[in-house]
Image (cartoon, rainbow, N blue to C red; front, side, top):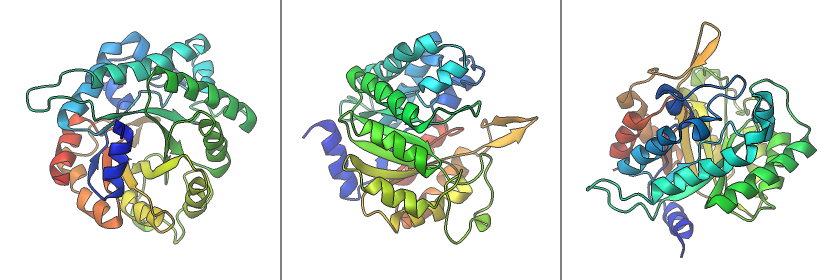
Length: 310
């Protein structure tokens, strides 16, 4: 078996899998510039050493899965950010940096990282709100996924699926490129709210039932795992449980912490590592065996998660 097949054998057996933490918000915290309407999308070209170091930090903690810093590198985002010509270079280099980190020796306690899978992270988000048609989204995503596959990605990780039509267009695209797929659903508003505010039937962030999205994603042969991600920690437990009602494969969760401050979304220092890891037992009871973190959840948080997973 190759490294991905070995990981999935562990996941299907119910063994704990450590997903990495944030790369985008962490790269900004470490000094990479933020692009207007493009967030951290340019960091892999302007500050590759920062991105590589973040991957290495997660690997040294014991991550089994690291994702490229490509949440904000879709063609539509780079157009909005004024750097459309960077599309091929930024998506290729992001995967290469993760692969390079995996090829590093690691510290004395961790040894080789050869077992770790590298995911090409793919989103259909827009920071400007100017979104392409579904047909254009599919074409853009086929191109992006092909670049990532050729750069060495082991799988595609679909990030922040917030509605059914764009999720379906994204899945149609990556299914043409020939790598396995994990689907990540996002629930609730950006800054989150208490779980008591969730309805009986949990909805995706921008509309449509989570149950319908899970059933639709399950119809794609390439889909091997589903996760709740970029979702407030307070919403994750119920969301994971709801996902598992309609999917019998591996389930993961990598939540975030966010708040609005002076009209901007911030993720820094909003939840302590201990408090974040305190959610892990409940997520496991709800059905998640693959656990990590998203925006605002850095190496200190992931270290506590690793301890909680045992």
